[in-house]
Length: 74
Image (cartoon, rainbow, N blue to C red; front, side, top):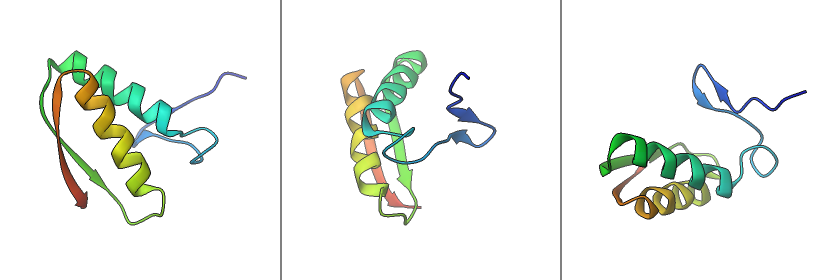
C-alpha cells in the first residue's frame, strides 16, 4: 500500500514514523522553491513535536532561498 502524506488539512502522519523532520524539511523546501522564495510564516500548535518540526520547516525554507518568519504557537 502506498503511503499517503497529504490529506485535506495538509501533511498528515505519526510524528517520528510518517512525519519526520526530514520530510518536513523536504516539503517546505519544495514548496518554497515552487512559490519562488520570499518570506514564509511558520506557525505551529502546542504539541510537543512542534518546536522540532518548526525548526525543520525553517531549515527547508532557508535552504530554498526563502526567509522563514517563526510565528511560534498560532
